[in-house]
Image 1: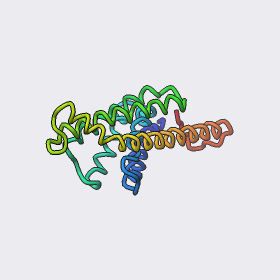
Image 2: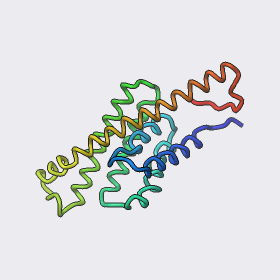
Image 3: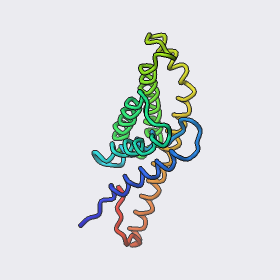
Length: 182
């Protein structure tokens, strides 16, 4: 029977992402966006979508729980998985960086729309209120973008390095476990 590396990779990503998300870090510089892109690019089907959902479901209760905007945040990470699926056939740093930029931007727009929609105290439900909410969130956008770029680079980079090492080991007859990385 052929081993499928997808399940251990998915579980490993969830555990690594959870540990990283729970570690002290600057606000919004978290692994979830980059991890969602990576999961979309390197995992098949439902496993790719499961990674950010499980990561968030496990860590959110430990980090302060849920809010009105939570479904918007989760939906945004699922969109990041979809964006990541467009990276399946590439290792281009430019395409991965561009995907991280698109992912961070859509996260900003969607999650802050949820914040505005759920807040009647801070932001009036007017166009001006929405723009005020977006303006207040700009510093968080830059941190989100930095986190997405950093973690996407780390996940895609380590994976590419591991794949090359496994290929080199297989070429030299040094891959006794038969681990296959696509």
